[in-house]
Image (cartoon, rainbow over all chains, first blue to last red):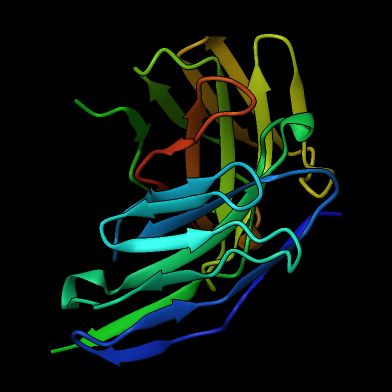
Length: 113
Length: 112
């Protein structure tokens, strides 16, 4: 079955540091890939997405590129802020599977001033 | 305006009870979902539903059942609650079976 693996946290960084959160997936066919963010006490918000190979999703300074050859969708940001502290989830969906999202385990990011 | 809303936000109940969580979306979407987030933050799909098809994750006990009175609502009914049902439940919706899902704020269920 489908699966998503992402690096375990917590990841602790200083403000303005470079962020990478690794994500790899296993799925049949050509899934869509997503990063969702969950701020403390809140629901999930879509951060960015990519629907086909070599697509780059970007939003709020975050970027991720759909790499089919390595089945990866790593999240990056050049300069993190304290306000980026949250839990980040990598996920995939397939249209022939009811569009249900399969999530990775989540990575907690803590940014210190 | 809240796009996807859930009630209640918190639900505390005893083992063996039956409870429902309501979900409403005002986005005009035709597909809705329920997810469960456990204490370790792990998220798992429970159901995907539109007016044509219900897809159930095979690991979901049949004590859980989705009920959709109309396209804008997908309620979650849980019978004979167990301690292990304690979790945060998220509702989501999308415009079709290929589009981005939008999540509600979650309902924290605690079974005592």
